[in-house]
Every structure is written in structure tokens, then in C-alpha cells.
Amino acid sequence: MKTDKRFTLTLLLLFTSGGALLAFYFFAASPVDAFRPATAIPTQENLWASAYLAKPTYTAIPTSVPTETTVPTPAFTETPAVLAMEIIEEISQSLESAPLPEAPPPAAPSSAKYILVDISEQHMYVYENDALLYSFVASTGINNATRVGVFAVQSKIPNAYGATWDIWMPNWLGIYWAGGLENGIHALPILPNGATLWEGYLGRPVSYGCVVLGTYDSVLLYDWAEIGTTVEIQR
Image (cartoon, rainbow, N blue to C red; front, side, top):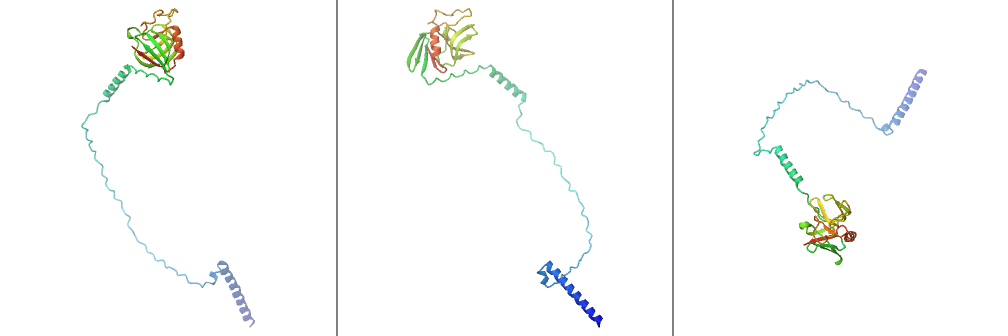
């Protein structure tokens, strides 16, 4: 009888301890799931069977090699490159031998300065604002070597040297180009020995194409004229 009571008490303690532990586990893991009725998880039966599949074989597909096509020959024939080079060389040589075009004279300034050279009179008239300022005796080129036309002062040199004739030309005012030489207005030339060329011959054609003035007159004109001053030469 004592044994049965002890057995019953032991079962009761185990049941009580186990139940408490089991309840604590479910409640700690998930409070919601602890009170959710347990459902049986169906198990799936694994069904399988082995099968033999034949390994596919690879069959090479023959590739066609394109045959060469004949390029049609054009109807025209190409000019040899040597001939073209010869033509270009001839053109370049002709361009090198051709004379360079003369540079246009600079435009006249806003101030109305104007120089008029009359070959028939062998005289120079200098105007400013349509008023006659100076009137000089001049000498032009022999055999009509002085060109007629409207030009402009394009260079000013205190004492220019003429290498062709070995002379010095004081108070030089260049007005136009004649080939490789520049013609202009200047004082009576000075020879290498210091003598004055054409002294006493002013008022008649004596120069090689330039317009020549007396020494004093050339100083006045040189100081007054400026680059771009209009120069007109007439017969």
C-alpha cells in the first residue's frame, strides 16, 4: 500500500514536472502556436525510377565555300600617275615663272591730302582740304618712264639707296611698283662722290621713272605727306 502511494506520487510529480517543462517550451517558442491545435503533417512518398536516355550525337553540317566572283572591268582606263605628276610639275613651273601681281596701293586717309603731278607741265601741285598748299617744279622719267594713274604713298624712307644706279635718293616717298623696283618721289639724287645728280635740270624729264623735286621742296613734301596720301599722275 505504501508502495502504490509512492508510485502514484512519483508519476504525479513526473507528469507535473514534464507538463510544466513542455508548456514552458511551447510558450517560449511561440505564444500563439502554444495554443494552436496540432495538425498532422502529411508525409510524401518518394516515388522514383531510373531510365536510360541515349546520348545525342553531333552531325557536322557542311559549310559551303563561296566561289570567287569576277569583278567587272570598268569601261574607262585610268590615267597613269606619272602623267598627272608631269602636268602638275609643268603648272607649278609656269606659276613660279609668272610675275607676282602688284600689291594694291593703301587707301587714302580721312584727311584730304592730295598730290597731283602733271607730266606735260613738269610740275607738282599739293592740296589739303581742296586748298592748294604747295606748287613745286618737278622732273619725271625720260621716254615716258613715269606711269600715269592714281596711286598712294606706300613707303617713307629718309634716304633710300638705288642699287641699280648706285645713287642715294633723300626724302623717299614710294608710290608704285614697276616690276621689282619701286618708283616714287624724292629729292635730287646724290652720287657716291657726294655730287648732286641732275642739278640744274629740274623742269624737264630726266629720271628713270621717279618724280624728282628740289632738295628743299622734297623736305617740305616728305614732312607733310603720310602713308596713304593720294598721288595722281596725269599727262
